[in-house]
Image (cartoon, rainbow, N blue to C red; front, side, top):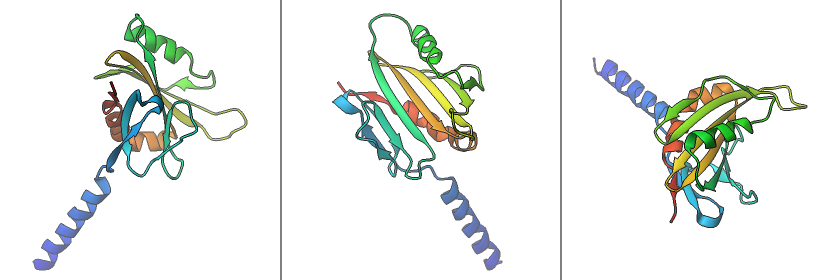
Amino acid sequence: MNKLVISTLALFCLVSVVNAEPKLKWFLANGNIFSVQAPSSWIKNKKSEYLSISSPNGNVSITASAYGKGGGSLSEFAKYRFSSVQSFYKPTTKIYKISNGVVQEYEGIWPNEKKPTYYTVAALKIGSMYMSITFVTDRNNFNKNKKLYMKILQTIKVNS
């Protein structure tokens, strides 16, 4: 009986560790305009004019940029942003709502490459700004980590 209890407890602990979300840390955009939380092991590309962070193994990257809200609506901004996605990417989902904006997922193969990439674009309204956040990875990674990626979208804050 004791072996069964210990085995069950060990299995529960292992499942908890495997399913645990990574620790997040704040990444500051250039110009101190906004911040976003992402896994603490991720790396910021300091040479980018946009906020650009990626996983240590390069399997996923996030790019974020902010735009002053000089009129217009979130739906107009989203239409503009989604229309600027490269033509080799094709939508894999309809546009769907999240609490601070809308998201559309795409998949396509970059010129001169063989493997498809999964390109997810979020158009958000945060305070007095519109923001564009993109996740670039593969379909399996995105689906496996979608909960984390959607959580990242909810962490964005304007630094005023």
